[in-house]
Each structure stands twice: as C-alpha cells, then as structure tokens.
Length: 171
Image 1 (cartoon, one colour):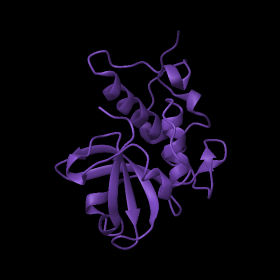
Image 2 (cartoon, one colour; image 1 turned 30 degrees about the vertical axis):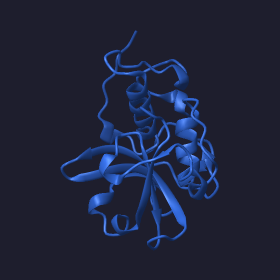
Image 3 (cartoon, one colour; image 1 turned 120 degrees about the horizontal axis):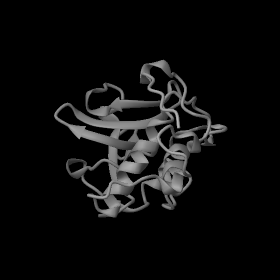
Image 4 (tube, one colour; image 1 turned 90 degrees about the vertical axis):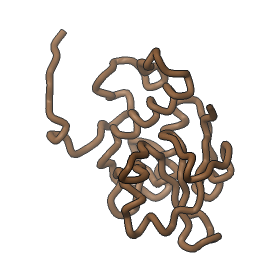
C-alpha cells in the first residue's frame, strides 16, 4: 500500500465522481463514520465532507450530478441523496423539506435559503458547513463561480438575501 501526501492547494478541480473521495475506496454511502458521534451528527459531517470535494466544480443550470455539473438545488439534492435523504427538485420547493429552523439555531448540515427581497420567492439554497465567531459558512453552487464556500454573514450580496433555514436531517 502506498501513501502519498499532497497539499490541498495542488488541486483546483473536484474529483469527477463522488466515489473518487481521496480518503476511502468505499462507496459514498458507506463512508467511515466518527464513532463518538450520534448517527445524525455523523450524517451531517459526512455530507459536509462530501460537499467539499466538489469545490471548484462548474455551475450548470439544471445540473444534478458531478458528471454534468450542479445548480444550487441540484448540488444539495445530490449531497443529501447520496446519504438516502431525498430533497425536492428546486430551491423554492426545498424550503418546505424537513423542519423550519431559526437562523440563530443553525447547525452544520442545515440548509439556508435566499430571496431577492423580504418575503420574496426563494431563488437559492446552500449547505451550512460551519458556524463560528466570524459568521455562517456555507458551500453552494453559484452561477458565477460554481461550487464555492462563502461566509454569508460577511458577504454583501448574500447576507441581506438570507430568507430561511431548514433541518432536513433531524436531531
């Protein structure tokens, strides 16, 4: 067995398939879980871990797979679907999946939604990856930059558009 260490900065593109995950040779549905955590916490962490392997993936309108590229809801649908959590097809329908959640109660693995105006139509969805003193960090597929990670609390475009949150995994 060979072990090769490579800096993360050496890669710009995500792997072509989720099964190309660098830390395991198993399928994406059987990723190693952290045994000290509850199954829901493990699921949240595994979905976030998977999401990061698509950083840099190009945006594609209507895209729902690593082979074609992702739009925002295609990305979240794919991530959760690989872990047997089925989501609706669009961001405007995913806002009704799972349970509503206060922005103040967000956890990694929750979904956040965006509207162009207060009470307006939902047009975008993102996966929460981390919450810290600097804000709410999400990973999402944007039509200008593809799959990126953003601190939405400090982003002049996303912060005012934050319109809701959902827990589609449960506790």
